[in-house]
Length: 252
Image (cartoon, rainbow, N blue to C red; front, side, top):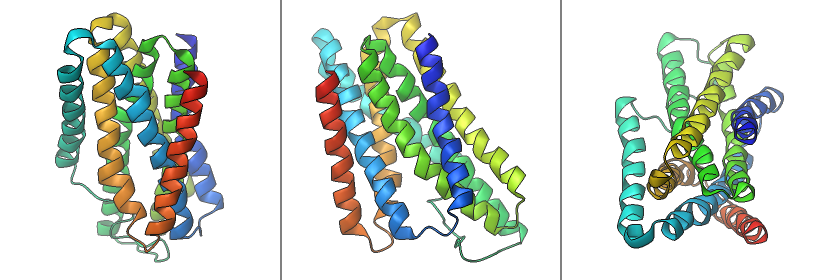
């Protein structure tokens, strides 16, 4: 339990670290953000495929394949429904970091964008917590580490739009902190869910993997390919994927 709690704080705290970096490096270029975010996407992709979905197939027994496929699609559907409940905004939509809009409409757009990220943090946190159900703490930490790594550039990205609307730094930080708290809650939910019943573990692992695959495909890859940095972002994703593959082999 202690290691899961520390991990939850680490996963959520990564968003806070990213937010603090966002205050310091407010003028980072789209190219830098795309490269870092793509690397994090590769890390998450590897963690989803080998750490979550692969484990689901190994632990699923006789019905491993149908349970795994069902879990993947339901996980993706869950995040998709969240997008529909909260009108979906891709990163930076409607607010250029170099502009300084002060009207209520722009502020509402920014807060909606931040809320969408916070909602996506819940299934990501669940994925981090579910990983501990396999009993392989080292691998679970690798999965959580991959998610935490993705949270750092995400935390950086959410700061600039809020500051651009004229929002005070204190309030900006508190809102960023709240998105990290959501991830802490998700991590603990995932951990306790598989602790209560190991029977649901194969499905839970696949479900968590599906949520991560959806976020990578729907959010991270489109964002990193929307500013003319497609080639760099692609290779950065491959580096992140390969690095996690090496880590997974070492702890496996």
